[in-house]
Length: 378
Image (tube, rainbow, N blue to C red):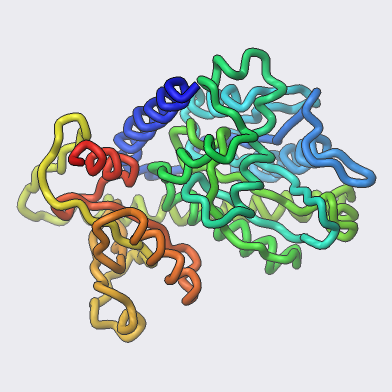
């Protein structure tokens, strides 16, 4: 079992490295979006007193897609399911990858043993911040238990095992920044327009997200275990409000991505000395150089001096230009654990979208690749 579990981890590393290289190609437009209604068929998902998750999320997914189709004629909407059918988690990612989509949106409802938790939260693939995030991931990943021959398909992964999820805590997908950007917009729409309690943007390890080769999020639209949330979620009006919020977030995200693409295109027309493009780093080649982990907390299309007042109380602030945006980091940590602690400290100080990035010789590389290189050096 341990060998199979190790193989599963190696498979993740290989996939993430492939996706990281693909992510280096900047998207200038958003033309395809995959909308994934969670659960379905023999998998009901979370249960409320009067509802099943699979039914509610399907309605919200179809309504969201309809808003996009009617108002954004240049965007193709692809659904992982349109009816009450069971779709394996790996097939949902497969649909997104084969269609070469630009964004993946997985829609869910939450549930709890307690009647008190309420509100919405949006997850991206990444580091488990706390036990609560881990429990949400375990609940959603448990859908694989209903799949035929799931142990072979997922190489022994056990969604009920906390140890199995530890692997996911080491990796962030190559599209983390874009995923966080869209997630933030979703939560802002929920909070400001639908007046839902905002539980924030979070990171955790979801099987449905880790194999997608594009930005992707998992949206928990509310708690079916909470009477107030359930009443909103089962109503046609509530479902329309939530779908409209997701649509508006998507519209904002699309406009931002395409504007950034235009800025970079214009920048490329400015004559300047040709610089060789940095070569992708292969961990198997045992690259030399110092690896550091930093916490990225801010990005902007316009430059800012490192002496700006808002940076004064931060540790070792640096900046770099990436995909047409100026990105600002704090810290210079020698290991991932220290960087995670710094990230948590910065989140407590108000930098809610902070996340860990890695560099070797001042060239950015995926965090999972940096970890693998360090392990090889031991």
